[in-house]
Image 1: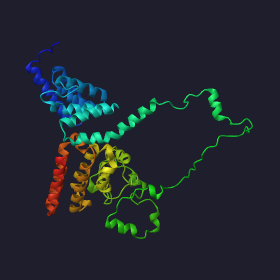
Image 2 (image 1 turned 90 degrees about the horizontal axis):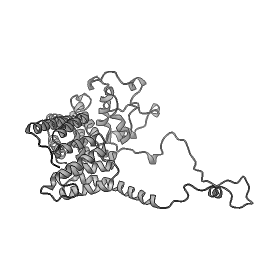
Image 3 (image 1 turned 90 degrees about the vertical axis):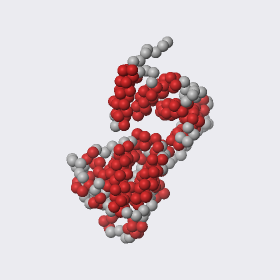
Image 4 (image 1 turned 60 degrees about the horizontal axis):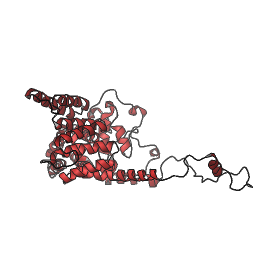
Length: 390
């Protein structure tokens, strides 16, 4: 079977559609990007790049099977479906990685592992793939353990009536008919708060430690006076600028915000309505300890939405320094940027965020650092270099 010959005009149009798809993808309009790549494939079905790009869209839309199908077809075109015995095997690295992601999404962990191991053979310095393999190791062990367990015979899951009777009646005929099976009773106690051993307490700075050790007034028995009245909890209809917000907004946490940040609560926060966006940004900037970012996001790694929220926070607060000193702002921003870069899967998530936002956030930091002077300028450059190299 021979492929239909493609005219130069069709190739040019297909490449133009690919360019539009790339633009839409960069804007996170994955459905539009998918449509552009599909149109390009219809015009030129011999170009594996179009299939690879469409597979990336399917991954973003979590259509794992479609992504795997596109990767397979593109790898067939490149002669790398099952091995890498081709003149330029590194050309298939991106496809193999994406196929691994799609297979992991479908629970095909062993196949995903095989794809990523091939990637490391072709590109041994690929830190992102190595991180993915490490993060998937426990999933794979769990799946293998469950698979072994399902093949073993298990005691009477569907027992016969006689078996049920044997396990529910007394062992001796002389036993009282009121006898019942002894069960361990676990006491349940209703409490107002978690025991101290289960409460995570973030490290306090000198100022906070002094305040914590000072005697508290009687009124302090109530929850933190961060949103004294219910009126403050009501979201404004219009988005306020930072200068319009109360002076305590940037540091104090509304009662509806988590006092101790965790992944679940942070996920809910970034979904808050636009009217609460500035409060969310202020919370991300002031109330999430940079050194704890890796533990908060865990082995699953940080996602692009969280990175962009931190960048938005730096940009928004940097453009209105009414509530924070310039030097403190830059120092906090540097700590956050370094903390983000230390999270698992950062190098992968970074691919899907808006480059312009990254540039703007560092520009804001650098401009303010220039006004501060001293070593802080070089610290911003160090953080930027870390982001560029990761």
